[in-house]
Structure formats: C-alpha cells, structure tokens
Image 1 (tube, rainbow, N blue to C red):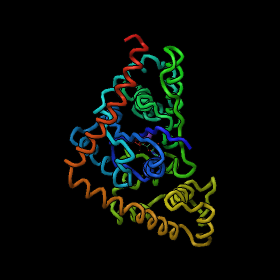
Image 2 (tube, protein in one colour):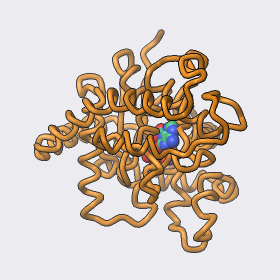
Image 3 (cartoon, rainbow, N blue to C red):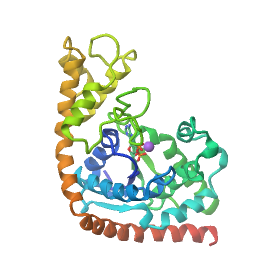
Image 4 (tube, rainbow, N blue to C red):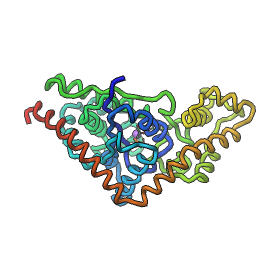
Amino acid sequence: EKRQRVFSGIQPSGNLTIGNYLGALKNWVAIQEENENFFCIVDLHALTVPQDPKVLSEKIREVAAIYLAVGLDPAHCTIFRQSKVSGHAELAWLLNCVARFGELSRMTQFKDKTVRGGADSASAGLFTYPVLMAADILLYNANLVPVGDDQRQHLELTRTLARRFNHLYGETFVVPEGMILESGARVMGLDDPTVKMSKSSKSPGHYVAILDDPDVIRKKIRRAKTDSGTEVTATPDKPAITNLLDIYSATTGRSVPELESEYAGRGYGDLKKGLAEAIVETLAPIRERALALLDDPAELDRLLDAGAERAGAVASEALGTAKAKMGL
Ligand code: ADP
Ligand code: NA
C-alpha cells in the first residue's frame, strides 16, 4: 500500500479520556510507521468554548506528553501546536468564505453543544469550528484522517469544501478520506451510555481519563452505570453493558462474543473487575511515561517548536498556493 499523508488532532481541553485513546490515539500509533503523519494539538479549537489561560497552557503540554507516552514517535510524526502555525487560522478564513452558513447550521455537533445554552450565546468560533478543522486537514494535503465516529459529519464538510474550492479556483486541495475504526470509534459515557464520552464533561463518573491513577480507574468502573438484568450480553436493551463490552474489546483486541462467553453466568461485578484490570494494564504505563515527560516541560516545548517548524514549512506552501488561486 502507498504511503499516505495523515493529519489528525485533539483539543487540549479537559482530561483526555479512554475514548480519545481508543477512538483516535491508539490507531494513530498503529499506522504511524507506514505513513507521513501530522499530529496536531488543536489549541485554537479549544478556544471555541471558555478556557482558563493558565490551565490551557498546562493542558497543551499534557496533550504533548500523552502523544509521546502512547507511543507516537517524532521520527515518524510531526507533533505540533496549531496556534504556532499561522496558516491554520489564515486558511480557515479563506475557507470561511467558501463555506455556507446553511451547511454549518446543519452540523449536529454545533446543535448538540448549544441545546442547553442556546446558539445565541455560543461563540462564533464554535459555529465555524468545522471550517477550521477543514483548514487543518487541507493545509497538509492529507489524504487520510483517522478520527472517531463523532467527526464523520465534519470530515464530510471538509471533503465538500475541498471539492468546492477546486471547482471554483482550479485543482488545489486533496480530497481526504476518513479512517474510522470498527471498534472503539464511539465510546459512550460511563454514567450515561446514551451520550458520547467527552473529556469536557463536568461529571466525575463520566469518563476514565488517560492519566487517572489505577485506583481511580477501578473506582470509576465499579461505579459505572449498568442495566437491569444480570446477563453480560451486548444487546440493544443493555446499552451500558454493551458500552462496557465495547471498551473491553477495543482495549484488549478480544471480540465482544468472546468476552460474552467468558462472562456468561458471572454477572456484572465480574465483568467490571476484568474490564478495570484490562484498562489499568493499558493505561498505567502510559500514565507513568506521561508524568515523567511532564517533569521536563522545556524538553516538551523544544519538541513542539521543532514540530511547528516542520509543519509550518508544509503549511505555508499550501497556503501560498490557495491564496494565489484566489487572486491574493
Ligand atoms: P472530545 O470530543 O473528547 O473533546 P476531541 O474533540 O478533541 O475530543 O476529539 C479528539 C479525537 O478523539 C477525535 O478523533 C474524536 O473523534 C475522538 N474521540 C473523542 N471522543 C471519543 C469517544 N467518546 N469515542 C471515540 N473517539 C472519540
Ligand atoms: Na469531539
């Protein structure tokens, strides 16, 4: 198979969760060696909702440490901060003038995020967020974008904007393909299996964080919501147990049917114990590596600066081409 140009990113807001790990990071690591990768810390995206500046700057380093701790290798991946490459914001403006109000209004994530507070008080940045995401991807002419299932619609918009730009101004951007996993692409909340697990949740029992210590992980899994009944089966009437089995499967690589037969007749308590240990086994070494890396923030900053320099060179070429095509 031919070498692909890969782009993906995570927002440095809240605590990165096992959803981010299973839906995104784990896959990035798996494919890194055969591709040319740009893995961004999308700090401009984080600004779409209010952030404490001091916390944000700490979270940026934390995400960098997690990228390295899960096994991303700077020899294969350009790891950098979005805000350090000005082309992201600049191309986003150009694409904002190609995107349509109507199509952004149809983005379900914007609608979901504004159900309670209402769209009037949302930042304009939250509304145009998918355009910035399109800019992130198109700036590198990425052909492969490994993301979780929640990004499916945004990715489709990216493809639409690339095609429209190419149609209006002549062949400019690669139309990227999404890469969404079969397993782990949609991890649901531990407290509510009807909502996607999200690192911005304020409910402490909602997620397992990548940096949670083992006892916290055990406690959170012990307290995770279950369904009525006692059988460990992934059926539509058991959304909570189905979610726990999906997480178990994505964490261990074992299939759901295999896990169902292992836990047949053993009840929810045993399932939770097994799952907690599987998660601890995966996350504990990652946590230790990340904490060690965070002990040397200057080294993390150096790595991010080197990444920004490499990314910036690629980005400025693509931006220059796009501007010239538009007559700028
Ligand atoms: P969050 O939604 O937790 O704030 P981001 O929007 O920064 O995280 O998403 C970073 C990556 O993690 C994206 O590829 C996204 O699809 C993936 N992701 C986020 N939440 C989940 C989840 N619950 N299950 C699977 N993948 C997820
Ligand atoms: Na998201």
